Length: 614
Image (tube, rainbow, N blue to C red; front, top):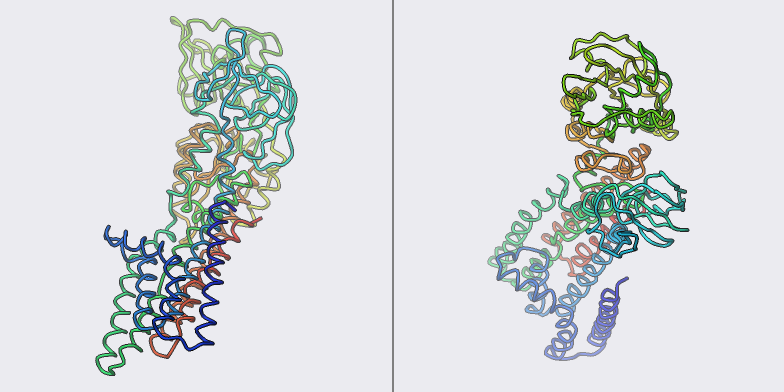
């Protein structure tokens, strides 16, 4: 609890004790009305000043139809008609409700704000052989960072010297430290637990994992769900209506009966009951708590609208490479019309600077065999979903899939495997067969998703490779041999054909997945190895590249939405029932206090359950 909240709680407890003392004294002793008024005013003024000033400021700005205005009118009105104890009770318990709201929001914010601490304040960079302390924003791509035990890594990079264990809890939710060594990639925001490592920065701070996480967290509350927007719009219409009804209750019966005090008291009680605090507070708080609960599990949800869509997801579309599989290929066979090393040399010209997982496999194989190539003066062009074209003078080297060869009129043998075809000057030279392995976690993940809906796999691989992976993990429906545009088209069709009240989820990690992530109702990106384009396009980011997080995110979203609906039904149900009672039958202000503050507290407590979702 913050110091400010603690001070306010002590103040409210003192005011409550003072109120109880005044209430008891006024019941035991027969004081004159002005003494009772003065005694209760001593409690009311310090407790109510904040609410009264808030209502006054909003009235000046033309925004007076809110809970502060309703409480101010109801409590002042109760003083006017001589109901002093009820007037003070309304304000005291309303302030307790406000305090509890801030406390609950603070608890929700704490689980998210821990992420805000992952940004290191400074970093140590080696320049001209010396260690220089700089701000993370000053780090350039290619800089060498020195990270010692207990320090946070400032930008994403690759270890070039040393080894350590990394604490990645703030990023992935994983409690177990991970061991990293020379050649391993590391994420900004991780903490080195031992030794000293040197890291080569693979990008600037603005493009780092830390910067993207902070940006997503800061923007999360800007994206509201339909339910949340409805509550906001509902409160704007609802409040003026109940104020008008309260006026009618106070005035019209009084004109016929002459019992002005009785009906004005009913109208004031009606006003207190009608205050929409429980809805306005608990619904956003529930969504905020759900986002916080997910972030503690290494799942970043970009807004309450994403929670709503996640809860309704019934079709789970998964990209294969890097999502179901590790995305770490290795060369298993080379065949063709030339020597294996000659085929690799030609492929290296095209793939040397590519970051595609298949290209990396080719480069790694060349390193193993000490194969080098003259790559100078070649002009490289990437054709999305097909491969690379390298040109130099009048020569041309093609390195890619069968679609690329087909475009250039080159016939190639059909190989039922992930294959890189290589041609030179319109002549087929050979092919390189690579293989990817399935993530261990994918088996359990797909099993969980199959209990929640239908699983679909999309891949650019050939039918045999696609079916082998799908059958192994239990995917229900497979689309193979796809280009990026075709993947997005399939998702658009799935979205179009979905049942009412359901949504389509797509999970992927590559730059080619961005159109699909946008086309789906919910886009899920792998935050660790996923490209920045994919992460930016997604609605949900799994920081630990484990698709079991999809099932976890769905569970968090479903429970959050269940709690939201519970609060809406409970708050509206109790309020409507009590409003009818107070309008027709004799009722005390205490009932109104329960219907307002009591219902708000219960709704807030219920909303806080989202923080404990497992």
